[in-house]
Length: 265
Image (cartoon, rainbow, N blue to C red; front, side, top):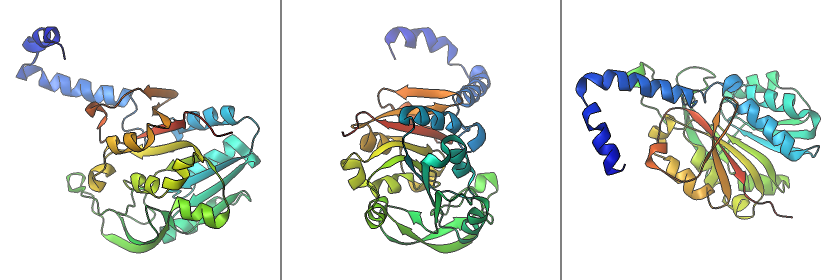
């Protein structure tokens, strides 16, 4: 902030105006789509899929839906791409996976009863309710919202690198990650794919869950920005992020989109 702005704003930094500023701040966050990342239908994710559809033309696409839950995102992918999409859904929660298999039956969707992480193994899953969209490998502290994560189960995890080697998958057109704070670990498990430039588009959620996982937007920026252009997803478009700033560390759910700057021939 320049000295002029400091001088100009100094008289406005008064206590009686703070409630107004707080409401204005909340309004601005909502208008920037912060808080909208949890609702698939109106989060801006449909716009992103249309954007990718235009970029890929009529080519077949491979989509990884990591944290598929009960299949709402997978159905949106099918609606956008139809049969030209091969969708891999990863869902480690046992009951949620069973619902997923019943709700998404298309032949071009493969459903896997495990999650993706930074390494292969087993992790505890914590949930506030059966088949909850808030299920996480972190026992989240949401006491201030009167939410407790008392349900626990043990689930299996692999890595994107290992899965692709085993399945003979050469590239991923879209890696969508919504795993309640574990998104950065999924990217760590795709290190070889990222080095080899075999992932074209990435969508990941960032918000309150990252407080529990102790990850920051800076972590995503450092691992992705050298090779990807990053955007914040808004309701009907993409807001490009040209440089990192501490102001980006907003722990309210929103989705980000990363597009590879160049693609190997």
